[in-house]
Image (cartoon, rainbow, N blue to C red; front, side, top):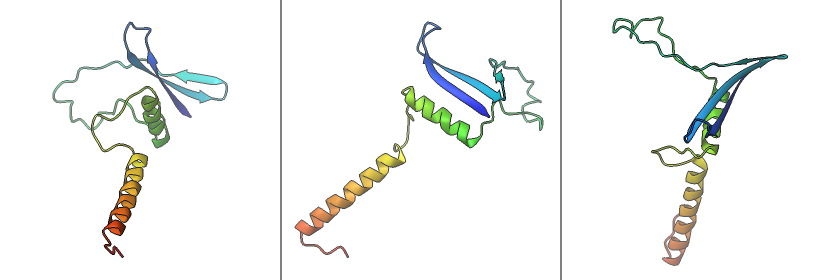
Length: 108
């Protein structure tokens, strides 16, 4: 099973994120190595054998997102987490009930 480990790293002289990938199989551990980027000819860009740099299963992707969150990273855009949205919706529902009750408006 592929395990991703994400953490802040200060060993490179800056505030960077390090991602380590391990595949533990029995007593053996396989560790991912740094990526090497290959320059492609413009004719190769749409070739059918062009492979993604990294493919993750859903559980590994979720772990990566959770680990990045733990490192302090948040989406730059969006409405926040589903938990925050649900809490806001409950709050608004409560406020509506209070306001409609006070104004004597039936909301059934």
